[in-house]
Image (cartoon, rainbow, N blue to C red; front, top):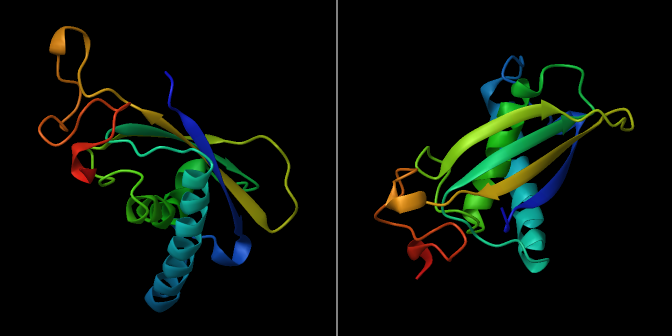
Length: 152
């Protein structure tokens, strides 16, 4: 499908959060804020290089430089996705807009203490063949390859 694009995030071990981490709530909040600010800059650069806003989408997330399951990256990933919302890449990351997230390990080796997250954003049409509704974004959005009605 045309319109898909990838964005790379490099995250230091100091800013890495997992769903099973032992950080206190204040440290987690500060780390999430740093990740979100960093993510806004990455998404802004992606837009400058041609990444287009989507209404409904899937994410393929490749996590590299970490030994644990890529699913544990969800805590680090969430502020980066929220930053995409902040930058207008999609209206929201709720299930009506982000219809699927697939986590997979990135087998490439990285320097110690650095992790990479590659997000492949794949637009999903809001209507299938014959007008069949694929997602819950029926009233607010046009097909994924066109600007979302939310931005008009």
